[in-house]
Length: 257
Ligand SMILES: Nc1ncnc2c1ncn2[C@@H]1O[C@H](COP(=O)(O)OP(=O)(O)OP(=O)(O)O)[C@@H](O)[C@H]1O
Ligand SMILES: [Mg+2]
Image (cartoon, rainbow, N blue to C red; front, side):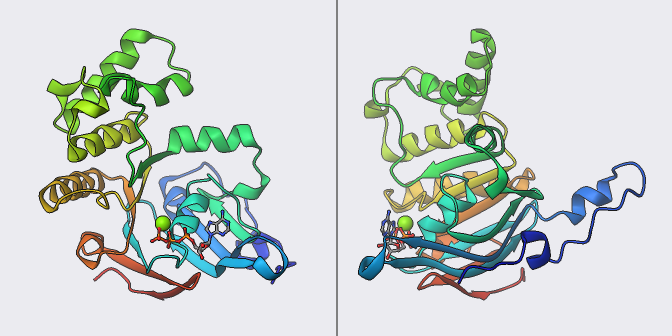
């Protein structure tokens, strides 16, 4: 299972030759996400689960991708690795050309904080904090020491999701759809390049789901890369590319149509 070759060999990345100043073309040529021969195994012995098996996946900056599959197929495992919340058991993951396995915890935490905005099915808001203070949190971790800057950015992010008038409300005083909008504002406030959403509409009614999906569509239209994990074909249809995970394998991949 383990691939003894280096990531660079596996991905056939040409040796970097200095051909002058770094240009926009160089940026375009580096895929945002490259996974090759990637495995994730949980447990040992008889209880071993191969949650991801030999995954090969490339995502370009600015794509809108849905990762689809049945319960237990490996979607969340894939999201955790994509989001640098977990590391693969073997294989390669290059994020913006950097080999994630070679980064230490501090560097991984910085990537999670600055480059990726997470949206989860369960919202994961802190119940004792107002919407505004929930949205401010990632800015604190990012080292934004000016309180007025944090407050200003949090309020702008809440405005962007249509909740400017709910900034002082705690999560318990908001509807499910509103709580998820606060979570999206929290994901956006650091201006990440990538939005990673795991079943973002899983706990919402039809109308609330439509609002959240139209927000995600808008974030993509503004130039962000959006990766949406879902088992719902109607939700996946919002993306421009569908990637199907089955028994831990990326089974089919349809190019943008
Ligand atoms: N921490 C863990 N320890 C052991 N097995 C795990 C662990 N996390 C996930 N698994 C197993 O790995 C497989 C993939 O799980 P994963 O959570 O990625 O599925 P999923 O596609 O997100 O499912 P769902 O749609 O239900 O959220 C499952 O068989 C699951 O039981
Ligand atoms: Mg899951």
